[in-house]
Length: 499
View 1 (cartoon, one colour):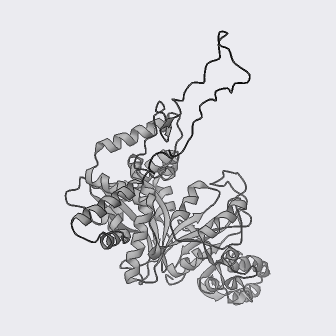
View 2 (spheres, rainbow, N blue to C red):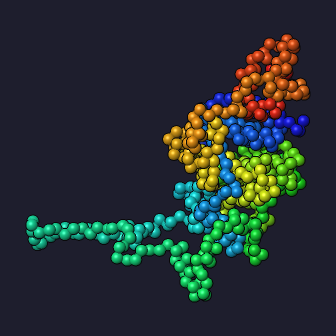
View 3 (cartoon, helix red, strand yellow):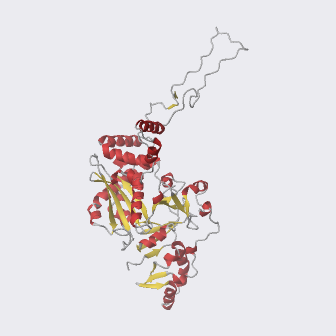
């Protein structure tokens, strides 16, 4: 029955180890196995805080778990690229145009130093900088031309031959003033200097500098920042991004399957220090290839569903972004890349690339306008960076309204769990209308290969002489509240004859 979503709901997990704070028994979530699922239903579920890992869908128990995970999405068409992300794109462009083996050697040297005891950082945790190499230990750091390693010595103690009058004012030690020298003209930023030079040049050419500068300062489109979309013919390297369907697998996916899995293993063992045996083909398939999503006949050219966004550098697979294309969004599932190319910041580059992809999709499919970045966790730096993609919004765990992330940050710093809609002017009494079930009889079920409403299912069970059907009410009610009434009345809740 491919037109229906078929799910099997489980009770709440006992406390398990948190992947963020590493506490052993403080993480809680509810889950269900999706035997198959429509893209429309999964869109409705992620808009209620659900996510998938392979075919397993889960929803954190927000008020109970140690690290509440808030669904976050970016409005792709309103996205404003930050200065740091421009630097990432510029670094990629410079490498494609001029890069060589020297870049790889520098990055490997940097990684070797980190592994020898220096503070180790993953690529996306590093400051966005044109120069990622650490400052040498023997190099002094200067503040306004006053070197901390070159301060003047204190005056020497007076000798016995020196007479000091008690009434005479003692000479004061010279003080070091940190800041701008008021006797000198104020410093100008490099950007201001370039702008003034440009204006003077235009004046010499007899042109109006104000009009010309305004035209030059007009915002570029995001596509103009991404060099892989328009690579010059004389570039030293070529970066190609290919979107291939992973489930059901396309021929192009199958042909790159082994290479993609090898890249995943290299990434997990290098970046996350996993054991090689924990990164086998079966585990990779279950985690990042298997998907319950049905392609359907609507959506983009290849339909909704699950894809791998492959980044090929000079014919070599160097990064893979796992994504779901849904009726309202592109949802990021996972990213893995070749650590040898970590200096290219694929974590950031793939995100802005996928936001650009949403923008292009929205031209032909206006309903697709958001980029979902997964979960945002204020207390976890590795997850907090997602709020830097503006404008982004967090999902309120009680009213399921979207709230600008900047309005939530201060509150979430003080307490991990919070009702967010009130921070955006919403009512503290607002209820989740889709979570209200006046009757469980309308919940749609699959029982003995037959689609049946829950009310009739209980009648069948009682006629069969099984008096346990009433005991299922609490579990079915919890399921309906978590997935929402609309999904509960549309999806098929699997009921085994063993209940």
